[in-house]
Amino acid sequence: MIAAEIDLSVGSLYALLTGVLAKLTVESGWNPWVGVLLIIVLGIAVGVLHGLITQIFSVPSFIVTLGGLAAYLGIYNLMTGGYTIAGFDAPTYSRITGGYVGRVRCSSSGSSASPSSPPCCCLTRRSATTSSRVGGNARAARRVGIRSWLVKTQCFMILGGLIGLAGALNLGWLHSATPQTGVSLLLDSITAVIIGGTSLFGGAGSIRGTVVGLLILGMISNGLVLLGVSPYWDPVARGRSS
Image (tube, rainbow, N blue to C red; front, top):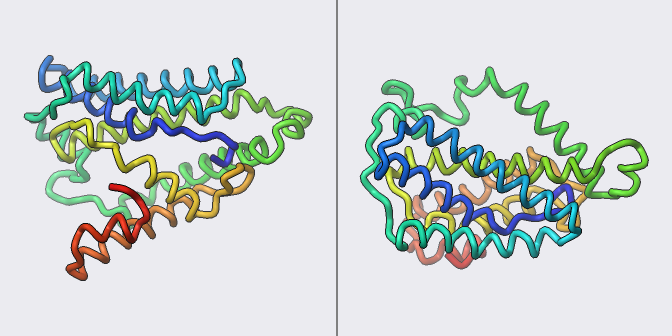
């Protein structure tokens, strides 16, 4: 969104890639780590496809990914018959992807995350800066030597790979895949980005702000649970349908 593009297929692609991994591991007996690599590559490939269609054929990303929103969920239903895939059993994989190393659960605020923090921050900061230049004024960005079509395609590519990784983590956490897995992710992701200060028209925003937006949404849900409020109030408080 900082690069003035949008991907509406986030939830459907997430459900599809999670389903592909579940089907490969549960029904076909694949090693889960090999399956993870495959769905990340598939996610990247889908992202590249979105980017190239958007940039080469000048089709708005809203239209391209809106088609993907329905198509990927349809592919999942064709692949599974619309049923939940359950029975995933890989203890080591589940411990690692579910946030456990040995018997200690990793905390997002603990010291275990600190060694990788500086490189990640530098990478995301550079990506956000370049994307904001392209999203703010693509013509000016081209004049100073930034290939805007490549930057935008890379944004879609990175997003696709991260969706694949998220699907792998989801399967390790829940041990199952369902077509309803990513239903709420689209609105949640857009809400978090907007709360984090990103402009709907591109050119302004930051990764740090998006993380803050995610934390705010999480605190709203967890706060309602801790207060004993009915779960039906959660979509009211967060402003989403499900």
